[in-house]
Image (tube, rainbow, N blue to C red; front, top):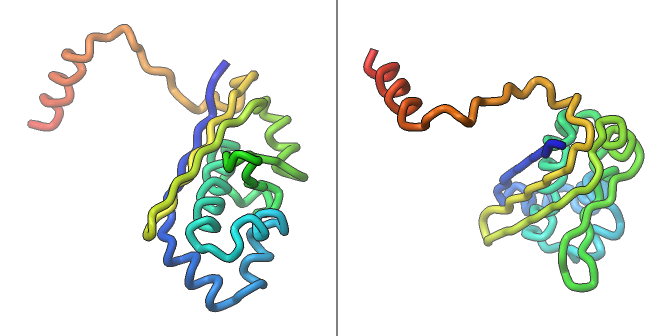
Length: 152
């Protein structure tokens, strides 16, 4: 069992400019009707959802390019907790890669939004490009080795 993780940060101002310049057309490109309804035009809320979508794409291992923006849907449950629904190509890709259970989180300030996605990979085959490190090595030795490398 392995974890697939993605994280993204976004300047809220970018979302504000996009909405101001393109209006509904901008929102319709990136967000489902439910997402737009819940965000009610608030740039910070839209930016948070956008950041999570990017994070999910990274956890999928492809970035957002292989899936549509609205195929990754971030909506709040009755308690306000963000939840993830994958549709279409995003759902198929997650299934193909053995990504089962997901956890997402988002946060924002007036200037930045951050999103994180973690998926439980039941079959870690798609993560084979990750080289495992030897966690039994003494970290002090590692630091000394790194220091020697820096001085060369």
